[in-house]
Amino acid sequence: MSENKQFSSLSESKQGSWSGKFAFILAATGSAVGLGNIWKFPYITGENGGGAFVLVYLLCIAGIGIPIMMAEIMLGRRGHENPVNTMEDLARQEGASKQWKMLGWMGITAGIMIFSYYSVIAGWALSYFFDALRGVFSGITAELADHHFSGLLGSWTSLLGWHSVFTIMTIVIVARGVRGGLEKAVTILMPALFVMLILMVGYAMQNGEFKKAVNFMFSPDFSQLSGAAVLTAMGHAFFTLSLGMGAIMAYGAYLPKNVSIGATTITIALADTIVALLAGLAIFPIVFSHGLEPSSGPGLIFTTLPIAFGDMPYGSLFAGIFFLLLVFAALSSAISLIEPAVARLTEKRDISRVGATWLVGGLSWLLGIGSVLSFNLLSDDKLAGKTFFDWMDYLTSNIMLPLGGMLIAIFAGWVMQQKSSRDELAMNQLAYTLWLFLTRFIAPLAVFLVLLKVSGVLDAVTG
Ligand code: TRP
Figure 1 (cartoon, rainbow, N blue to C red):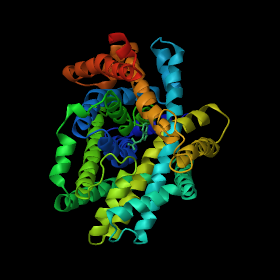
Figure 2 (cartoon, protein in one colour):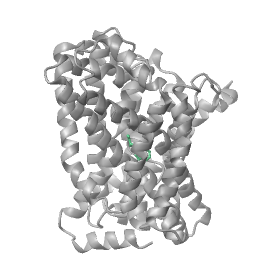
Figure 3 (cartoon, protein in one colour):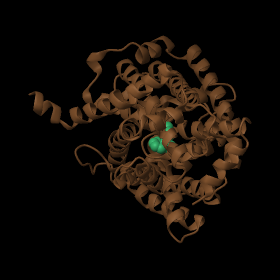
């Protein structure tokens, strides 16, 4: 159980050095930047009509995501343990009900559910990495790119194979418990991904319908915005910042006491948002110049980016680099999805870290088979219009993460004494008041109203 404690006292003893703060920012940014930014953001933006959706998403990041991320880091730094025990301990300290630990359990469950399909999508990226190396994308047309992607989805054996490979890669890293290697690698890989994205935006500016894409992404047309779209935008704010399930709480224990939670949070949220917007600006110009559908769904980046790579000089090399970087971005996110579950198991049960990781990873792998089959054998088996994969994504991003985030905000804003939070956040009076206001009122109320609206209760009440 003292793994986190040791780690944090280690970083505290090095107070004043950059390493503690830097290690935290790296780990948290590594968790935040992932498939959510590059795969999910563009396709849900396309599905939900563009500008108005992006605006709501940005507002949710600023008004809900940032204050809740601060709250989650703060709880983690005070609690120093896995989310279940952290919530239990903090609730005891504040004289509140022990049942707050259920928040930790919901987070652990959400993490396992997300990891189950996350590794299926990361598997697509792995498969595309090897395709790029074989030169499959060189000179590829829009039609062939679509055909190639459908071919991958159609083969459940390939999908299962790649899903297994990615799951095992994640398990091996988490089981070793030392993420130092990966985190060091992320110092180079993350900026590299950033540079690749800039290059791809450059290509899209010259060769795609860039103006049209900018218009699509940034001029809001509110007639396009449904209640469901608002929920998706809000849910994605949680998903992309890794909020609402205890991942950032677990990482918060690594943060030295003297580091400003506000400033680090804003750095992470900004980096995360910029990556997502760049991905959109790389993809939509190509979508429009090739007459593709922005709303084509989860395959969007896999059917558009190969066209760009296929057309540029050294395209196969760039494609290879890009998909490899995407796999690494996914890995540094994936470890944070199962870490809380593994930490809880090793701290409370008589089981080794290796055993716990294989158990959690194995469970998630099994669940992931449902998502593998959602793209082929079971693609027509829908419940209320959604496949198994759709349901996993919907339940986690749109329900569990916002609910978890709302409870975190309520705990940090109402249950925890202001003396504690003021002390922990150590901000000037104005910033603290703003945080408290957002955390007490805006964030929980916004989540509550959106959930109520989508569940139909609000319409029933207001007629
Ligand atoms: N934020 C990651 C992404 O955008 C996904 C992720 C990692 C996540 N850890 C999380 C989402 C915890 C929710 C909760 O790809």
